[in-house]
Image (cartoon, rainbow, N blue to C red; front, side):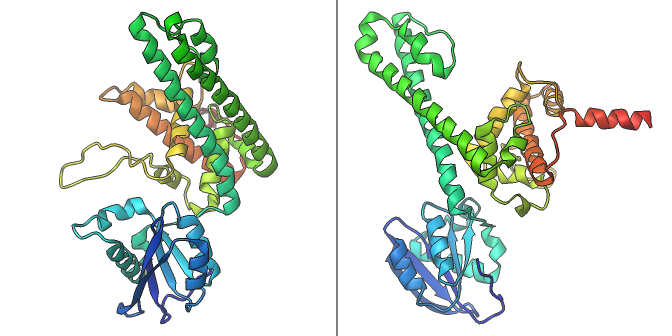
Length: 358
């Protein structure tokens, strides 16, 4: 990405992306109106339009088309700012919301102070392709889960209950418990669940191959109990460049694992987490936290930290402990990645022991 002198007399363009037609609004270096228009939302139209313009600052929001659009516009010699749509939502939600108004707001915010857009860094095209493999597997798991719940719920009114079992084994166990009269309706569903399980395993083999061939750093992250190949690869691909964060603790904020704030005066309400950033990655981190705090989790600093929080009691203490462990896990994984250190499960205990013996 090219970076230009912000004091130069260049235009600033706000671009509101839509599926078919996108709207742009242009202001000059003094904030005056310098043009507007519409163009088809496709790479060829963008290349033709932006390739004919003098270098400018182009602002757009995150969305379905933002990745390819930012790459095409940047290749035409412009500086591109991709604003965080979640952060801009309160600003753009007005009684007079139109594509033109949104484009104008993007242009004027970018001209005055680009930080107001909460700009994000787009991951590379190769990383996006690899991440698509993880997302495809996640979609299959979600469909399988819905079908499993459907089967479990269907047999209950007939006085049957399918025993608890893992998702990969469900189609075997369920076949033994389905009433004969329901077999014509549910057997095809079980066959579909079996097929999905086979596809999910195939995707998991692909994930292992991608990790070993392209991202050897994932091995270091898998030293942490509860972090498998899926979580490690998703973490690496979602972050991209670990040095984009000055401090590891910022990673917890990036994945939306920190509480919202709405402090006014003496009021400091306890709010839910922001849920900003990548939802799939946040789900994987929370899943790993459940394992760490569960019956099979080994004794580690993370487990002790979470257990101590849960024992404090109070409303939703266990849920808050899981989220807190997930947040600290994200910080730990980033730290291991950027320092290339070996993971020490009981580092705090070891440090305390050394200090006590000195």
